[in-house]
Amino acid sequence: MTASATLKELRQNAKSQALTRRFMFLWKALGGSPLVKEWRFDHKRQWRFDFADINEKVAIELEGGIWTHGAHTRGKHYNSDCEKYNRATLMGWKVFRLTTDMITRAHVLPLVCLASGKIPVFTKSNTTPTI
Image (cartoon, rainbow, N blue to C red; front, side, top):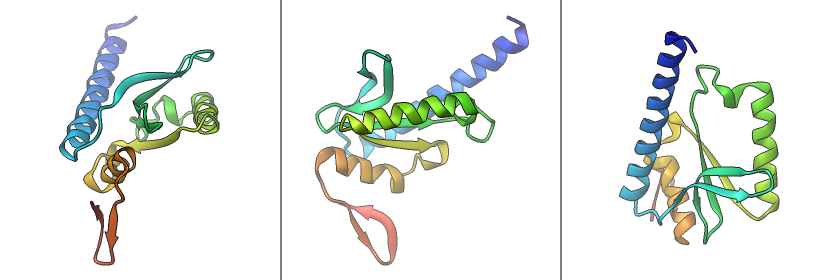
């Protein structure tokens, strides 16, 4: 492996960790239930969710790299992601995919509500729900 390839890998890992930290901070700040990181929901295929609320069967996938042609946006990987998400849905999981731009209160709060059994309230004047 070349030095430039290693540096690129380090940068990608740092961005991924920052995305994870940002999501978890927001999830906890909004009163989200405990999540299991890297939950393996299918042992045969060894598929995992980035985060899962096992009791409510709510899965959260953080999709980074969508603007830089990351793995999740390329043919083969995109196909396998679709297969994974379809299988999870058939198993009763509610799978939510969040891009980097979606790690906001407006997108995360409804998921917190779903996982906790609370119903978010939307008003005409505001598209951000309240509990």
